[in-house]
Image (tube, rainbow, N blue to C red):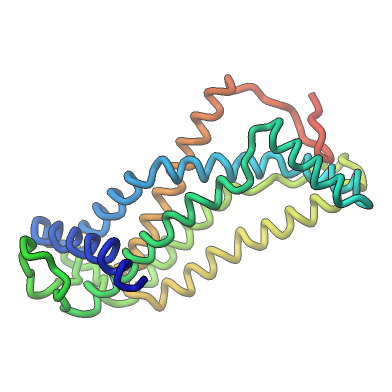
Length: 253
């Protein structure tokens, strides 16, 4: 499995990185180009994942209502849930599969960046890719990407917050009644995750080489921008019509 990972993912990405570096000897710009290329290749999968995740988020109030309505009959809850998924054309697994496909690629890119930023090891270069001898980790003449960068860590955390914020459910209305308690708890947990992940991103980013944190920031930023595009397209297809406020999982005109 390790040999397959090395041959199919790591080595091609490593050689692509070095090939780009030979053309553009600025490691920061190469990271930007490589990140953009990977995001472009994975765009269809990522879009499918975003649409599915958004659909599940929008459907959650109705699912909460089902759980409260049939709280003593778990089998009924499962049946009604699957029925609701079918009626709304939502696949709960559609958001996971694209992420699972992307994960090995992201891991391979992580190791590529780690190697080029911390060691001059070019043993896995193809014969037609020139050996640069050394990777200069200074980008744009003043940004050191071989060492930890607090600024890049903060930028990565900010991008993480922005991306997660777009997926966050709104707090249930005050007049939603006692049944909104469970939804309010779910919203509270979502908010905790909303703030926790960016904080963890900053903490981890402060310990990684700046090039890895730059990739993290750019990757998250591109994901957030893609979410904006997907959401705008979805709104345009729906004619920009407002569906009313959600109260205890019911649509109120």
